[in-house]
Length: 94
Length: 461
Image (cartoon, each protein chain N blue to C red):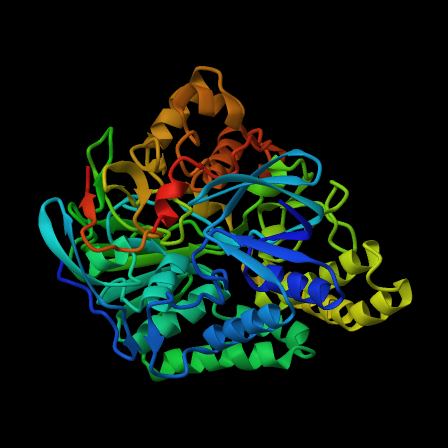
């Protein structure tokens, strides 16, 4: 797994948020998107493609490409790049 | 819901239109996809973040424009997506609370633009970003997209993002740009009347020199390697047509790649509203047809900013102001003479800026080699995982238009609604069938202009 990506200094983030991704605890800050929190935790694969079962990650990061869609709180096809993290959120790559 | 003016998009163009109309006494509502106003270039931080510094100049410019709009009495509805117009002057929107229809005497669509996707082997790997995406992550989330990156593409945004990423601490191993490094000189004459733009460009160039970022001109990204995620990127020298020169490969070990070959106007919503579009051969994009005051072919619907033809934030603001003043006049809030007088300086500046845009479009004109980088196994449609080989099969089976390629292969039928593949598919089909790209028709536009099923979830709190 590629290493975690750094959160930049110079900005105060929101309060601590705890959620889970595929059962693993994910620590994030209020205001962060699901995609950004996962990148910061070193997780680049956000889903497996349905046909080739290939790994996909964040691409356009602005809600256009729909490549970062994940299952969030039971709802499929949610864009991780636009969705803010919330306490107790259950995130899944499938 | 009723309003006198509905503005779709809270980027520079939409904000400027809203400000001018509202100041003249027009009731204005702005709806915008994102949770914060500002759009892409003027992207603001999430509400929960506090910048301890001054923020970048785009951040400050955006904040000032938003404050100006709020002071002028403009109302905002964030996290709200416009997706169709079934009745003249009535826009269908959806947000976390559900669907709504907004009736407006006039509509301004300022939908913005997104990076032109170019299919190269490996471009679907995790760790590959669009240049705009890398910037969004940096500016909007303050997280680095990678530690060691290669950037590839052309255009002003590439320069800006390379400089911003380097400054933020990313080790940039190379910036590969197939255009010549002398293009800057060709743009100079057009920039004489717009010297702040020239200063900006020089500032970014000198920053990159200072940061010792290797700028590889006349090189193109030909391949991205990795199994789980990006591990390397390969660039080649190019000939005049941007075709790779054999034997000139250079391989860089990286953990992320950002690519951006200019921007494509977001014409989906205007097309769904019935606005006519035309092909711009120089920019190699479709753009809406507009009057001199930026009214579309649909009376009462105005189109401004990059969504109507990519030219950057300054042009977007000037266009927005002209549209806002024109609408105020049409609605009887400004006397004709006053509106003309107020719009005159903006139109004059737009004429000067148009020369800059034209020079840049010439300098960065995309060459055919760019669209031949994909191999048979390379995915062109990321959503439906359609490869160039699938397109080839479809052509051999008789498909000769994007619509037929869609029905044969599902290319462009996924949730991005073709935003990632329509341009590449058209370029490929043009080459394959010996036609001009402009003669390849766009697939028909149908509502919703964006998939609406997941929107409730994205903004729910």
